[in-house]
Length: 231
Image (cartoon, rainbow, N blue to C red; front, side, top):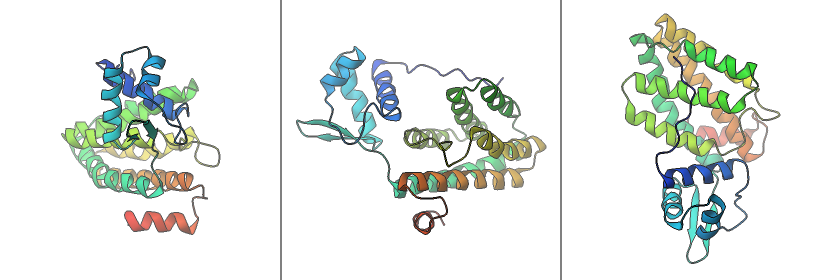
């Protein structure tokens, strides 16, 4: 069954990291401000040690930057960073979709999960289903390390403006982007699954590059950034 339940992080440091991520995602924490470990610990109701550990993990991921004796600042990816992230995903996920089709991996219930989220107007559940689908394709073809890499990369881009924001795609359109991938895998058509996954990632990546740059998707500057990194 396509399980949507999100597992809670296993320890305080992981929970603190997720809470900071949520704060960045909801713009509670913004790049223009400076924050302290003490401030975050008080806000979360935990000691400073797990917060320090959490922030070190986020710093390794490039999401925060420490300022000596002055706390830390949030760092969001720029257009070039986003293009680099999708270049890595494009190297890993389309081949995994091809292998999933060849192996007969069963992900047909993924579309049901996306549809259920749409019916209930539950954006959080929708993105959980989206992430889990991509993760299952990678892990289901035996590439655990690739799945971990993609999960880490998505944790960064998930902090940006959602790709379903006004002027971009709706959740319905994103759902429809996934349907050809799922259908091709179900048919055992690895070649089509690979092409569909590639197109889905290219469309999503270029939209995010445009949004981060504050430009229309077809602006020449967007193509310039994308082509310099991905093409």
